[in-house]
Image (cartoon, rainbow, N blue to C red; front, side, top):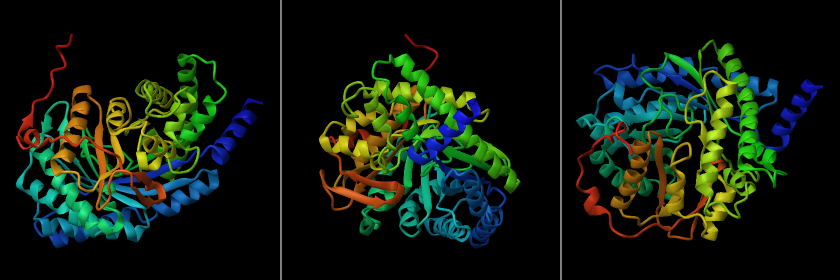
Length: 451
């Protein structure tokens, strides 16, 4: 009878509550592909990816069909390219196009790893790499890029932070015909993790094996449904229900991930249990917070409710899999969550409130549309703020903002698919430029001397 109940629960989660495997991501090391000849190296990159990932989409589709669990995205992540090679802006574009062409050849949705790790400083090659990012994102379709510019152990590279604002604005301009969509494929990190299967920040870390399968699971709708009818429950009862639900979701992801891994003959890496919303009605992290008792996401209490949700999700996931990793918790991407969009349109969810909520969510300021005329220094200051939250609190934080060229506060940008649409949010217009222009490296925080 218990088995029958579990089967019914799983069917219900799949059919009515938007449970899915958000992504099966193959990580590939490219450390053996590089030499002095960049054209030859880029060919080696293309050849290795197409060889190792040749059957990823086919196998993922077969497993999804057999188990009746949709695998929404098939993705690739590679060694941070700026870590493995050195080049000029033109040479970096060779690698960008090799990665994009390889992704297209094997049929995956997105490829990540056009990335650099500059949390303590930039080489000359890193600087040319940053200059190449806007062109790479505007001249490719599947490529995602990221920069790690801070860590708890090293502090924040404010020289790199200063470069982010102009680079993001240039990307917005070069992709202006697509409502600055190029910016949706770039993220600036502090404390980036090496095994993240979610874009735009996925890359294959240097501590990883030659080739692995990482899985990202979603399921906000499942959690929301579990909490409905608990009007008189205490917060600890709600937390326990979330934990139990996360356990079930994680077990489903573990099953799918290990089966894909087995059939491909590639080691299983990690399972990232992140409640990642989609534009579908009912598949919303904001709605979970509202079911807990908030009139609207963004109201006072939202940060506390999100903290409890994130913690309970992690606790349930850890019990269900021995290899939980990535960014497990809860994402709050505005454009991908219908209730967050509504809250932003109502004026309840503001940019500043979102920043406060990033202190307890999985990552940070995610998929937020801002006015196209936002000053570069203001964008850099947003990144500095978010990096500081991550560095001080020893957590991963990130910024993925889209200054939509030609749009102003109150307009709506629409990118379609999983990226969704977003209202252009108002931001603080007071000047940050004198602070950002100072540059340097913000010292690492002290963690052994706390009151």
